[in-house]
Length: 122
Image (tube, rainbow, N blue to C red; front, side):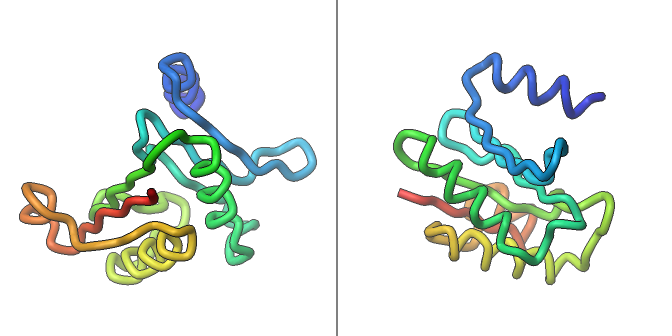
């Protein structure tokens, strides 16, 4: 699978990954590389239980120094896509609850995607 190859390549290059496991299945995952959040995902059957926030907190504890994130129009759930505005609000709340300072994205990203946000956890 492409996801497995991507994850293996990231780990080989020093990425930090934390996962939530239920029975013998990964139900949530967060990954960072060089202080930037690469991925955060929770299986649909395990959502709305604050698992995403706990994964972010666990990841931040493993990443030395600051952890940053950028959320743009491109980030969406291919299994259960939500409205763009709702996705942005959920991402903002999730990041803020995990201790990130969130603001509107600046520079080229902000110009290309006015709804994009940047976040940093120090």
